[in-house]
Image (cartoon, rainbow, N blue to C red; front, side, top):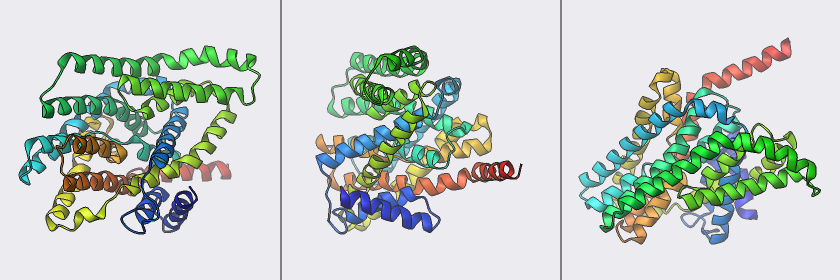
Amino acid sequence: MLIVFASAKLMAEIFERLGQPGIVGEILAGVLIGPSVLNWIAPSEFLTALSDLGAMFLLFRVGLEVKSSELMKLGGTATLVAVSGVIMPFLFGWSILLAFGESNNEAIFVGAAMVATSVGITAQVLSAKNLLQAAASKIILAAAVIDDVLGLLVLAVVSGLTRGKLNILELVFTGVLACGFTVIIAKWGTQAMGKVVPHMTQNLRVGEAQFALAMCLLFALSVGAVYTGVAAIVGAFLAGLALAETTAPRVRDLAHGVTELLVPFFLTGIGLHVDLTAFTDPRNILLAAVILFAAVLSKFIGCGIGAYGLGRVDALRVGVGMIPRGEVGMVVAQIGLGFGIIKQNVYGVVVFMSVATTIVAPPLINIAFRGLMQKGVKEKEDFRIG
């Protein structure tokens, strides 16, 4: 824990001083101390658990900053962004692997690995820059939640097709369950918590009662999300969303403290999975470069087209914000490797794509949202002068 946390914060400090997002430094810290370079730390179940908790608390904190009523208004645009941002990356990944002479099943799995967005990375950047209230930020968050549900369905279809056991009834049931859970919590969670939280807080005698209640909801909805088929981080985000309008500042401060402790393990954990030995073959280097370019371009164009109704500037911001794949792409590749469908070298390429899109996204988000950041600074200066 000392090595991971300290190296993450040291690299973050270096990158901030160089004018780059600290989040990039924390991910690269994982590459540096991981098996590929210094080999001080290897991925383990313990670090994976801390990483998962970090991602959950990060999304919970983000949910606390967003009102569900505002998010629901953007549902149509967010759905369009998510759907177009799923179709294009899948087609890009599938066609590239076929062009490189790989099997159809392997190509399908790589296409599936390029589909889902890892909202944790974008959320961390937007939260650090106080940009969560921007229209493009809300679209990104809503679209990423929908994206997770769609990614689940794509993975289910791909797994069934490649093994010749596609169960349509099971697929429909999973889709309905996942969509129902997400919509119900997003739509009525805030109303329910508005009645429950004040009543329970008055009657509970434990210390930090409201924080304890918030933690119970966080873990309960994360478990519920997993059992309905979507990621735990979606449940964590929905828990924050449900509490956003009733939570006291004290709870936000406590959640922020826990998040600051755990998020470095999430970010460094991404870097730990990089295996540079996969790139001793020039063909793999070329494949990795093409896949990375396609992964960035397909999300940028696909999601940007879906958000074009917001205007060109916001469409650009949404396209950039949906680029990171993070741990989601690695999970899909791991499943393909377990089935014996994806070869070890292709698995290395997919992991590289997942990490590289996570690293390139923060600087691109900084550029895309620069106008809003400059506006925020000017407003603060005007306020001080006033």
